[in-house]
Image 1 (spheres, rainbow, N blue to C red):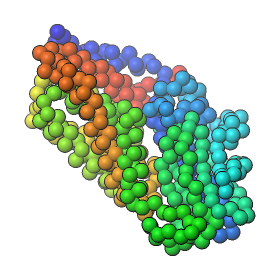
Image 2 (cartoon, helix red, strand yellow; image 1 turned 135 degrees about the vertical axis):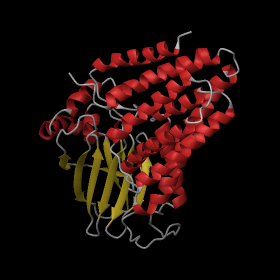
Image 3 (cartoon, rainbow, N blue to C red; image 1 turned 45 degrees about the horizontal axis):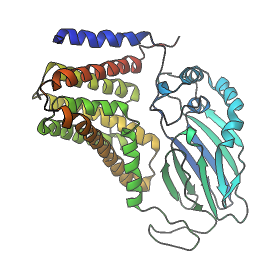
Length: 395
């Protein structure tokens, strides 16, 4: 059996191998699609998204850009200035438009791009948001509209507004799912939630929004939140006894719920460039303590609480990018947080089913499972620290 010092040396020696890996990583975030129209029937459609990921065909089937076979193409695009990236997009434009569908009365309507808003290169360690703008006139006698794009373009938040109804429709669409048909041809102003009027789309109730964002929060953990998954697995590995696990999970849950709320309300704002490396550090700490100790220390729940605050701010950055509307803010926030909890509980349940039940009471559990698994998770997290702090450079 390895000594404690040998184990720690192994972790950081293996992690240091990654220093020379020329790669950057950006988490795949949902795109924000806004459709608005006025009583003169003019409409605007804007898409806030990661154009580099779009061109490189890096979709939501990946947790981040490094998991795609097209990583090198994405990295080169990320380093282009705004003019060069626009030129690259122009080559891709026809392919993109073929897979974007705007429907009026159930019939696909041709789109043409008005302009692109692309920032300069900036910090390549961060993903760059760009905006594609469209504009046009809604055809006469149009009663409904809907929107959809190809699943390869990833998840999207789709929102519809009019000059009289700023929150006509909002939904989180997974894997290329089409929006509902939204009524735009009838006067649906002053329509209360739950009220029906012939020819009008019924506004989503707060409970429907709540359920929708439970799904969003769950998906952010499983399958998209690998770093959060590994943190929870690290908590599980310390001991198969229920009490230590419940103490840690409760501490973590309370903390990230607090910081998620503070972050989403703008009371605390911390750059992802700071939060993301610290989340990786929290994983390393948990794993090292798993290696050095076989029981819950008096300080660990406090540190887990502090780490939970970091993870909550990470959740907040995602939810902020999704852009909850004012009317759906509280229900969306609560639903997202509950979805995160369900995701964490699912991770724990899988650990118990596949590890705890079968091996938890074995005399060799700690030697053959806790320590090796903690070493491997720490190696992954050490790589993330190096990557997220910019110590990895692009050749």
